[in-house]
Image (cartoon, rainbow, N blue to C red; front, side, top):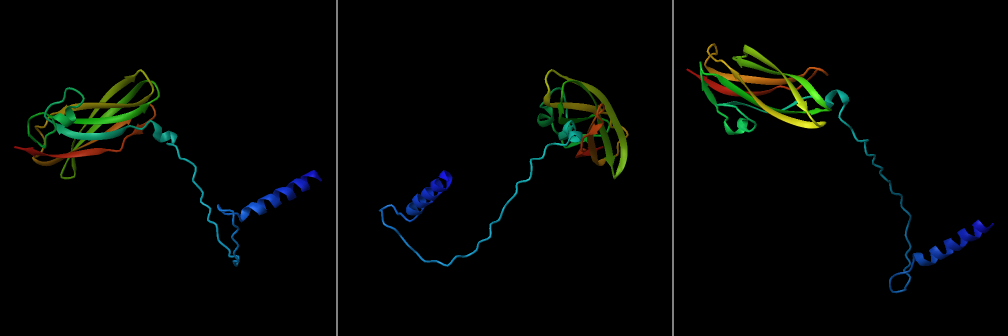
Length: 179
């Protein structure tokens, strides 16, 4: 019974305060009740990276360079053409999340001219890290060009992770091979 008395007293107090303005006057209005629709929005649950994509390599940049010796040379030494017979250096930067230790990778380059595969070059490399996380590498691969045709040539690069069998999306660069 005490609960009913408490609810009745609370209702009376709130009803008395409901119409009070800042100056102590009470404003009354007569209105017709209208129905309003309430839209509810639902936020989808956050999505996380699927396990099969978590440790997938990701190419960030690819280019033909005059020379490559260290990280940063991809940006510093980028060129747009090469003479046939001179070594071509294809440089690329990629990143990958590594849980720990060593990961075995295959760095692959396809050289394409006129929609035909001119050559394929693969390089297996072990990358070792001290801490788990997202790590970035830049490297360059030198390729002989004596048998390449002149004209527009495309170098398409992909990185494969050999333990979990994850492969990056390919990234390409196009350049001119001159006589």
